[in-house]
Length: 358
Image (cartoon, rainbow, N blue to C red; front, top):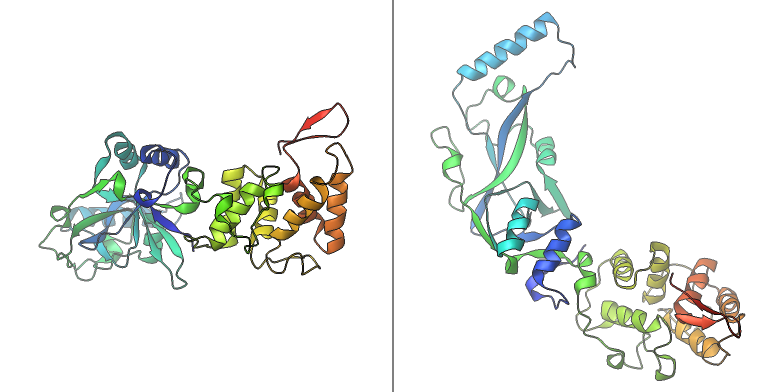
């Protein structure tokens, strides 16, 4: 399950306006809790006539279509709508977000998408098109006395989701839902986001000194400030062991690593493998080095290869990879492990300096 957070409760390294502007640009969801004091209605708006026979119309089809349309014009008008139950989050549209960024508040009149929980407790995004697929005829059609074969079924519909007071629960022919709509006042302090979408904006409160020696993510003073291990150790500790740790699936950690360290996906997946307390894949054989989380193998290699060797020894990288493969790791994880350990700048010869930026 993806973790959703209230933006106002996150320690950010940028303003909320900047974060929402970034999410709007990237077409990432910005949400609000579904208020308990309102009802949400799916309102059907007639679009076009359905042609069930393709672009070619026979004479009989043409007559049938004309009769149906004439009958619809003569029929009593009705408001096709249905009450939507169990909505968890409302997704704000781009126009509303633009207003929210500009003035910090918006009167939300309708939405086109919302989230609800499935039976597996996963969030599902519900759009108007998906709603029509599940409820082609409005739930209240029978209550309204609609002859749906002539008045509803032959037309395509668009849907927007609107709001009424909680006490309004039934729609009949003698009351129009249009007169019941109410706006929702939304402020930028009330919006929610998926945590994985704002990882680069979250201020890191954990430092190396906060990680205890008993943790598998501990990095000795001797080998700090030499490689990517410092940042990886903080990520692993905050994600799996920190006070606020509430990890979703490993995929969320991969996304966090990609966002914060700029790793490509395969490299981030390898990093997540070494940070996972229960990694899936080939692990090291020596349980005295690491049992469970394999991160101590990285600190072991940094201490026993880079820290005790001459910086211009060009064989160090191959020695590390060979060691890890011999210990049982896959060749890919051994390759990326060596990259995590490699200093940002190191000498391969007495004069030539190579800068590594992968």
